[in-house]
Image 1: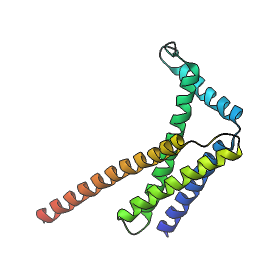
Image 2 (image 1 turned 180 degrees about the vertical axis):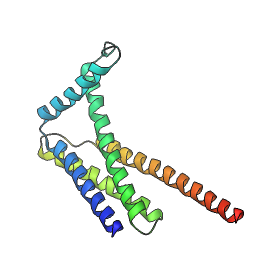
Image 3 (image 1 turned 45 degrees about the vertical axis):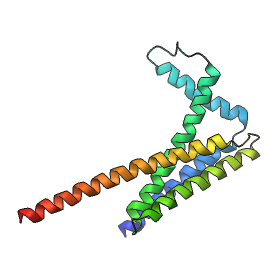
Image 4 (image 1 turned 135 degrees about the horizontal axis):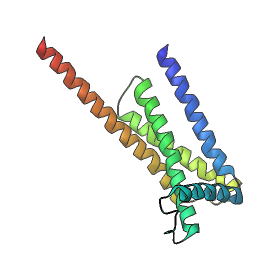
Length: 162
């Protein structure tokens, strides 16, 4: 029962994350730029030097937009990783391919939605999206393998002590 609840929770989180990503992609160019500029202004306002060293505001806002792509898909990749490795029974390489494939399909769909909002799809954005998901999967796998190694070592120590 706990497993089914966990799967349900992660599926809801994944749907909400994908909806958030697609909503952002469906925004017209002026609204999207306004949102990115707002985030950039917030970052500059909390910067130690007040952002005085920024050479080009447009370039900075563009970097914020690109970082947002990677961060959104980092979250999605983390959710997919948790779903496949913690709640589904088989823990094998097929799950790695499942996570990467789902992230890539979502990235391509995300860029396709931008055609409808008057923004052009970019291969660079698909690569950034995929990279965000791949980094999340890689970090998750490292943590997963470290935890498993620690647990195995602890079990071996218990067996030796007995």
